Length: 328
Image (cartoon, rainbow, N blue to C red; front, top):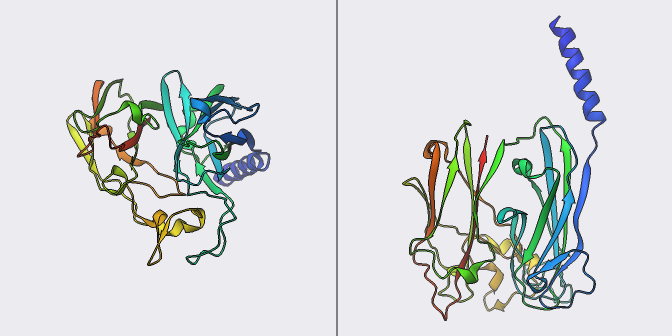
């Protein structure tokens, strides 16, 4: 009897896999992100003088569990500098980061002579990510945004696709709970350590597991800035604290994505330098914490602050921060 059941299961399972098809949505296709009014007849909604684009897409009806694969491609249209960027979901005032990245210095510029052991300049940045953990966001129709902090007329080209398929091995949470997102909003935050950024959330805590996803990257282009100095991030949840120093010291391996990086004597490039949670030409990934035993049923207090990160009027140092909670 057990053998018969097993045979039936294998037959049905294999048949479902054989008939399985992917639904691919081209969210942004050769989209331009630039500064100014240089985009002629843009194919997408444009905001912030061309530095942000958005598109509303229809999501296919799929049976859970669902696998969601994102592919992001970025190349320079003329911008020589490294710029931070984000692809994010928005609904009203809520923003949830899907992909956080830093462009390389002029990624895709093929006119620069090859040096520093680089055999070939890369044509583009190309990232593939599994976003199945954000599946509750993708229902009916949703707005997807892309932002790059460029300040030149010929900025960047962006391609972004989402692939959906039913997959019994996909891990989908029950809910995604926004906490905060100030990525790209640095002009409105003068300080991060005098009280920090705080919020209160009402959580019923009816599930067995809660994970906090936290993105953090420091910026500021001189040697004294937040970009080049280790600074402690403190996350406080109901008087329970997590301490982290975002830092990357592996940036040299991305040289092929940084053709216009400054280069100095001794085979040192600007793109090689260690930085606060990012490298030019790579993703900036989240820190993940199990906060199940830190939450109360009902009102919960969240605070995010960064030590020694006060900004003055003549020093433009800043942090891009975002956080959300997955409920399983």
